[in-house]
Amino acid sequence: GQNIDQPTEMTATEGAIVQINCTYQTSGFNGLFWYQQHAGEAPTFLSYNVLDGLEEKGRFSSFLSRSKGYSYLLLKELQMKDSASYLCAVPPRGGGNKLTFGTGTQLKVEL
Amino acid sequence: DGGITQSPKYLFRKEGQNVTLSCEQNLNHDAMYWYRQDPGQGLRLIYYSQIVNDFQKGDIAEGYSVSREKKESFPLTVTSAQKNPTAFYLCASSPGHTNNQPQHFGDGTRLSIL
Image (cartoon, rainbow over all chains, first blue to last red; front, side, top):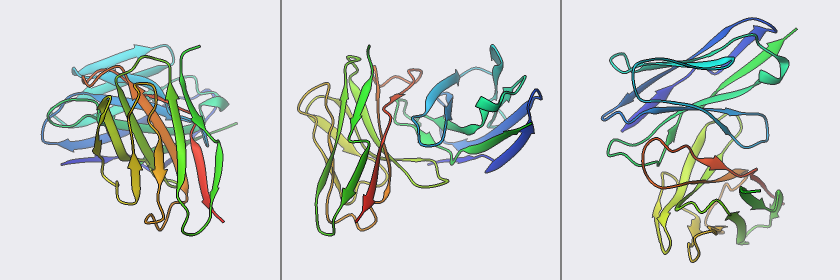
């Protein structure tokens, strides 16, 4: 089976940097996705990591350590519009795209 | 524009009633998915389909049914057997069933009991 853990809530200040962690236990690793979901809206794709290391996309970066079963999403220069839920998700052991999602981390950006 | 369309946006169900949620995509994606999201929770998979005329149960299929008669359509029926149907329902699609292809989501249908 697969198990994903994320903090439930985080609060950060506009302009700051925040790191949202995700740990996973899976019998076979086939990559990890991050999605952003604003309240009442559809999740939108942020990143996909399958190799160790940091991948940067503008203000957002995603890191993966397969040996530690750990990923994080790094948000820089926080803006009010970044207030949202951030979901990490993993595909199944045998591959394919039937994702298992974590419960999400609700990020609140304050002035 | 290509995308996924879910309808209706809001839906109310009476006791003992079946209701059907629509999901249509014009992305030419092979795979489609239905998720349920409860307040403060992540997404839980109800059903998924990798190809036309084929679908599999997800983690919480009881009380739900689907069909996949056309590539672009994957309707979800919430039956009277689903005793706690109030939730936000999300439909998604992906090009195929390989690992690195992200799922694209519709805007969701919010279902409530009258």
